[in-house]
Amino acid sequence: MTKIEKVGSFESKITVYVVVCWVLAACGGLMFGYDIGISGGVTAMDDFLIKFFPAVYQRKLRAKEDNYCKYDNQYLQLFTSSLYLAALVSSFAASKMCSKLGRKPTIFVASAFFLCGSLLSAAAQRIWMIILARVLLGVGVGFGNEAVPLFLSEIAPVQHRGAVNILFQLFITIGILFANLVNYGASKIHPWGWRLSLGLASLPAAFLFVGSVVIIETPASLVERNQESQGRSTLKKIRGVEDVDAEFEQIKMACEAAREVKDPFKRLMKRSSMPPLIIGVMMQVFQQFTGINAIMFYAPVLFQTVGFKNDASLLSSVITGLVNVFSTLVSIYGVDRVGRRKLLLKLASKSILLVHLKGSNSLDEGLAGLVVVLVCLFVMSFAWSWGPLGWLIPSETFPLEIRTSGFACAVSSNMLFTFIIAQAFLSMMCHMRAFIFFFFAAWIVAMGLFVLFLLPETKNVPIDAMVERVWKQHPVWKRFMDDYDGKEGVKNVGMII
Image 1 (tube, one colour):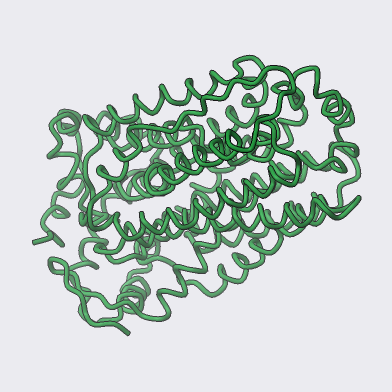
Image 2 (cartoon, one colour; image 1 turned 180 degrees about the vertical axis):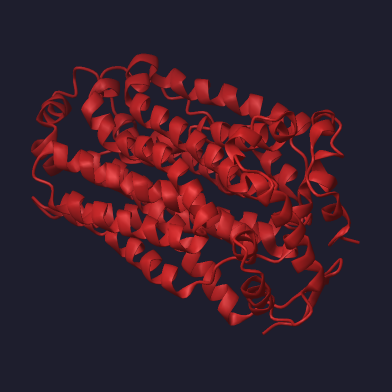
């Protein structure tokens, strides 16, 4: 155990058990990240293309036609994007399950779906089987991405909430790196290396499956479902202290307000719910329009397009994966020290790939190295800003009465725009060529302005005091809060001095 920390009237210790809960739950990010990283590498493997997409394989052999367009195939893009369409729909079912049954069983269901999907994808013989497997994986991602960030935000002490929540993003980056390493090795195994890549998705799913049994339910979820005595004992267990009265009273007040809301999705349409809803949705939209998933999904394809050979492109993806992991550690260190806004504004400028190829030209070694450096700089900037904070901020800013429904809208927005990027990127690259990177760069400028003028700072604010401490104080959003009818007593509990 560590020493007792006191923030306002909240006391806590970091115990071994609560750290284990954080790490096991964050395996939901490992599951999601592995899928992000594996799909691009698999779609670049010749054996996989011959089995399911022979037309793309033939086009790849005739690279002289157009290097930018050799992977432009809607079915190939559907292999990647179908997962996110399924995740979009399932996130709303996950929201209901989170509210009615709790965060823990929702995480269990996520791992079960992902485990089934990974096994089916490894055994697939027909294209419909591979797409069905992707749908099952998508349901797992939808349930996991809804429950895990909420779990981490609710179980973390206020002074460490940012760092704990970012464990989800850290594990996403580790999953991407692991997938890149697997792809690099599996690409040399013929003709079934792609089956190994897809089948190993069962490992992070198994970790989360075990984790869902070991972890504890969050106090907020227990109290919300009228299990107050269990909620208090759970709070004592995860805080490592006996004096949890102040924090427990705040949770109770938030839950009383939540019980008065019979239809949380209808409540989301109220004027006072617009600030967290707009912020939550736009954080997810902007996260995707940085262009990060276009690079992470299709990194091997992208590197092949600019002239790398197959092995070199996969190795370059491993390099960017390493940069991604270590840069996320910067965010874990800084988010509760310098705040959310400052980290987000770090991505106000972006490395733009200024490479315009003609036909099937390759790059010389110097220019190829520059491409890798530019991609790494971009990934580095994303990994300490919009990557982790795109999940953290929506998970901590909704009041409890609309927390699961509001976060479901945020998750579904992420999945919708991830689907759009995954489905459209290869076609956009074919038609826009190098200008696609200027397209994403323009969005970066819009993001900087959004953060500067509309995003409030939430560092060190108790999760159930956001309305009074954040939304009612913000110069723009306070105008929306005149019809808020939550429990006023929440505002005076757990204030940070």
